[in-house]
Amino acid sequence: MPCCHVGSAGPFAAQFKTDAQRFSAYVGGSPNLPAGAVGPELVSALHVDLKLWQPAQVPIGRPYRINDAFGNAWKTARPQLSSDPFKGHPSDRACIESLVLTLPSPPSGCVLSDFDQWILKTIIAIRGRSLALARLAGGPAPAQPYALSTVGTAQKILNVYLKYQACWHMGGQWVQATGQFVNHPASASVAPFLCALHCPIDSVLLEALLRDPIGKELIKHGLMNNLGHLRQSSGDFDSWSKLDCLETYFRFQLMLRRIAMRTWPPRCACQSAAEHGNSSAAASNLPQEIFEPGEVWDWLRRLADVCGDDKKEPELAVVEKRIVYIKKQQNFWSLKWCCGDWANAGAISFDRNDFSGTCYVTSKDQHAGGDRALWEEISLMSGDFRQAPGFHNAPPPGEVARIGGGKGYLGYRVFTNQNDAIAYLSQWLTVK
Image (tube, rainbow, N blue to C red):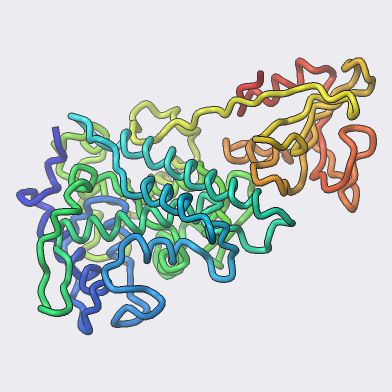
């Protein structure tokens, strides 16, 4: 059963159409943008973004091209000065395009969970493709991440492209030659997922939140700093382009989705929406106060729940554990973490060369091979390899004598034996 508040006949159609046409006019090159809607209805996290969005300039400026959804999404997802491993690899760029353009088949019921599962897997696939090309490029990692090589950049190319499609579907595509909005049948595949769409996380949105009561509460509770950087599960604050924590990404999207949910009809087809009900606390136009006093903290506190624990939140995707294969390498008295063709991103190491005695789990600070280092994989799965107690920093310049050997190590953790070390890793990985 499709969502009851979205679509041409839904009660939210007029609100979303008005906000969608504002964005469509901008990317279509209109010199004058229509005003946004003033009603309280919010369709999705993307709709929250449309309310907060303020164009930097009118009309759209170079190097972006009018109504080029994929090309512009690619440009905006690549941070300025970042390396582009896709240069000279047209087949890999075509692969990314096919991932971005292909939405899943809509289910017969609520679409939230299916959409979240799809976008999670697609973010990982885009990120992995970029890292594989970066490995071929060789050399040390650049100061800025490679294009599309982080969760932050991979999610942006997806969400910006879908923002175009959603706005074209609901509001039409602005045609500069005629000065009119025209129907855009090619965007119809996004129609079943309008209520599930995520927003593009970028500096424009985060800076808008800084000026909004939502941002002030995020800062107050340590989830964002005053630069507009989100806190990842490791505790670090990073810019959107360096965001590499799926947990942080999904919790942020869930927060914005819940804001929209509070305005949905009480008897919406989505069961999770029915529990939130309709609320007069939603303001007529963001950015303004949208929560009743005291409610903000309750929402933020729920964001701290472990993903998937709340059975009433089916829209949260479950991250699958990566299968890790460990093999013995006699030269180092260790079982090496193997990622792709590279086996030097971490290790389970031993005191003795018969693979017995005190056991250590080590991890590289950076991994030039292109795949993730061990600590990065744990972080991606919402853990923290560096969390005390038990973690030991490698001394400068990152040498780990005897236990793993070599330079460039982040540090190590100590265990009584191999089974204890594997049990520790199994919290986030499937070890074989």
